[in-house]
Image (cartoon, rainbow, N blue to C red; front, top):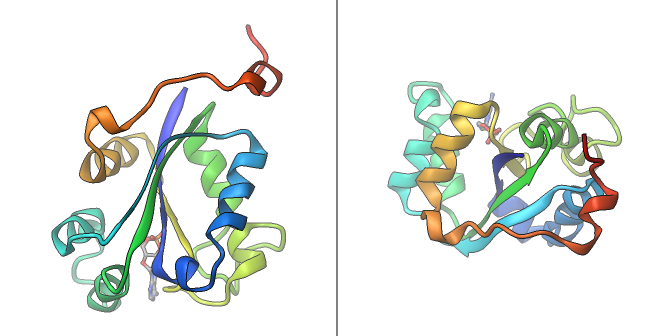
Length: 151
Ligand code: CMP
């Protein structure tokens, strides 16, 4: 079972899209292992986006991500990292395929609604930036055995 960090960015919150987007992940079968609304401290956002430091869009990206509360989630499931990124679509909503979250709901490269980890190492790192271990809950939903077959 793989875990990934998902962030509902301030544009998703201000456009009242959080419920609809969370439903897309839930409909796919991914399970919420942690969920919280938070005004993200600048230091945490800088850690999250440290690989983008120096890019021309870095400062405005950090300003955007600290402009209001975000909703942080840990989602889990088989291949959850790739599954979540496929659901999101390309970074720029103008290029994201129709049927993806960004393809259906966005038109911008910065205001792209949701962040999702891009690999196992970044997922572990990003989850640790925003969550303490005791905030991540291990449980089974009644329908899980109808979502993923055994063996
Ligand atoms: P995310 O998947 O969270 O990872 C880095 C973020 O930087 C990205 O989503 C966008 O919000 C933002 N971003 C990436 N490329 C650009 C760009 N060219 N101009 C502005 N913002 C960008």
